[in-house]
Length: 480
Image (cartoon, rainbow, N blue to C red):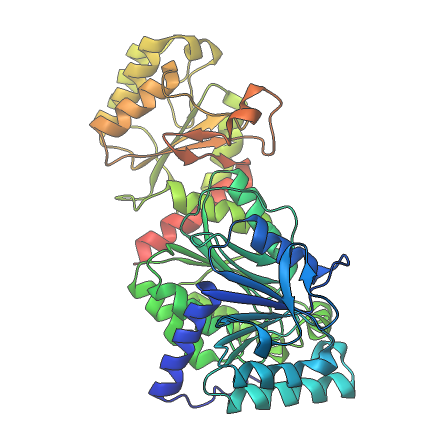
């Protein structure tokens, strides 16, 4: 059964939105429980400092006066500036007294990293979580994110307050996420290394108070968010979730969700991970997501590639798709996938188009879809230029997938780059999407020059996962 959403008045809702703003844009931040010893708290504090957070920073621990060159205070009350975000990294039994102290000092947002609550599946853990929930329900000014979380990120503020020591230093972007699992913060790494910018990430853990729904609603109204991603183990408040997803749809922001719990064995694991009871309603929730136009995926790889697809695939005029490459084998692989993917149509070229292509391509190329230009055409600038021109002038395609063997950039001044860019300029109604057959790193000199790109956008990588991702993007655009 779904948990019933609590009644929220206008004042409570407004306070929560203001406090969520403090979660992502604090002027003052304190890491409670930080010490010089290796720990999540130390890693979080180190990230906050090293990424150049521009607000005030404090450590709170009565055993120290300094932690890694950061002033350390005995209590929140002793911090000489207003704390907008308190990150709690202490034992579970010490959380409630610290929450009271945060409340007395008007701290609007508290992120609880600590575990030891209902996910333990013990009477003691459940009682602790019930007490924490009652405290959060009674608090009109301090919101609680967690417990059992990994931290928060806002790259537009250089705020990196998570226990991950491997985050790349990249420019911020428009992808925001709400993740019930801290480990899923790792999805940022391949996105950032592909040139996709991250805006904000919140990890929610057991969601004793602030839920996925509230953060989706926040991201829907956030001008720095264009795409919303989510890792979800169960929808705790269906009514508010519906309103949040509807709001994101109205704002034209796709939600891409990896929702787990399809099998009973996994639901048992979920109860020990985030204590999410709603996992028992998986089938009902998947139907709800479909009705709300939330894009569901089954793996982290599909989540990543679908984000990239939305980055490079603006709304097309239709779903007529052509695939072209210098490899007949890749063309056949991708054509099979396109024909098996809902929302995509592998268009059959007309006799007139096949005739015109035959006039401009080498005689050993084929003139059907999928289009095999042959390896020799890669060196023939005129053939490439005339081929893309003919495709654009035909009016028979809405999207052109251009196949690459390896995930390497298409240079703007290369014969292929010039031909594709000319197509995009002369026929902007045709969406051009490069995709590589293989994924991962390619061992050439491009590794040191940044991610593989074309015309400023990332390349889709991998055949099956890329075709699925394009299909999802096109279906979402078509249903709007």
